[in-house]
Image (cartoon, rainbow, N blue to C red; front, top):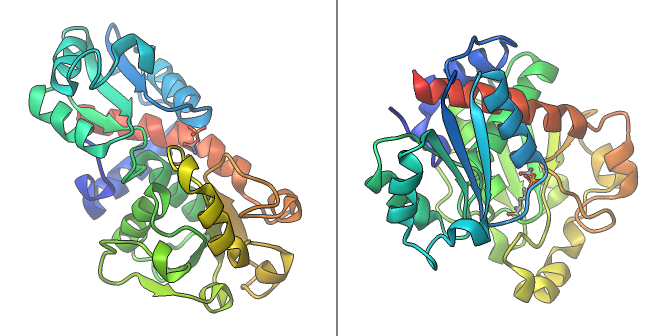
Length: 286
Ligand code: CP
Ligand code: NVA
């Protein structure tokens, strides 16, 4: 039994195994007759739908649970929610405001707990990102990737750990106050977006204001304004693919033109969320 709270929980070997599983469309029905709880404290389009369909593809029954229904940390403690859901389900997946709630859930149940996004990490997104890069670039070893914008968020943190684990070279470009905290050794952090994208084969960005950060919107928009991924920045990269976890704020972190360009891989990336989720759920059951 394994949890996936962070990319580090997988490690290089686990990531390789999940990617190999994700590339197989039919993994049988390891979840036949079993339930998977999907708890969401925040909105979701991709994560909810891709994980739900991954459970169906593995023969299981997904139960989508909105935040009011369980009241994680308000109606009931994280531990009691986990114990309750473990009575009915074989895997507990949750999107939470506070990463520590996931940690507490793992301490309360022997069933696998999977992070569907926390303030700290978004591991299933990073698995889909690496799968997408593998499909488009063949060799991940030494692959140059640039991430431009808010580098101190969940998506950037998971991407950084995933890139290191597969041997890719990631450079993060952000204003100094939005640099990735606790960055793993081997990830470069710079101020200048042009420096980050030089020779990059993939340019990645995410929203400047993540869910739960609305009270910081004004200062974030101001500081991150010069970090928009536009056509001029993409032209400085190496005929690079554009990536974004979505949802995107057109005209903020990325232009409409870059999102819609022939080098935008965002819909492949979105589809890969389902394949990566199928691989990840099969892996936690191994
Ligand atoms: N990328 C992602 O996690 O999207 P949702 O918030 O729509 O799930
Ligand atoms: N960093 C974003 C990712 C959304 C998928 C957020 O947390 O809102």
